[in-house]
Length: 78
Image (tube, rainbow, N blue to C red; front, side, top):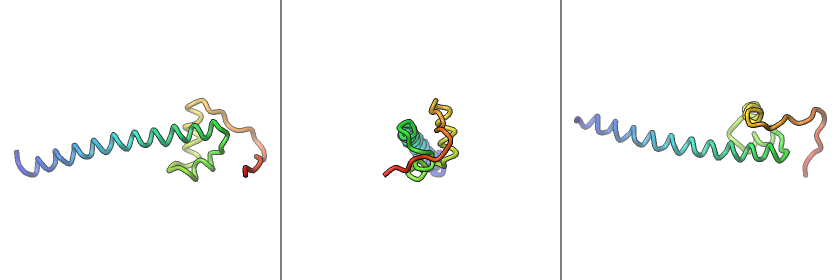
């Protein structure tokens, strides 16, 4: 095996290890975001504290059974 293939295999192992860690971290953030949405936080507030957009969070919320908030003006939280 050539030195170039050895470097490629080592880089591939690193890539796969980091990909797994990234997916676990993403799942952790999504779980926390869903928890915040279930507790009544708005998608906009959750988006400000996460790496995801409010639209994406709404989509994920619906896919996980979180009902949309009622229409109308929401009371401000302190």
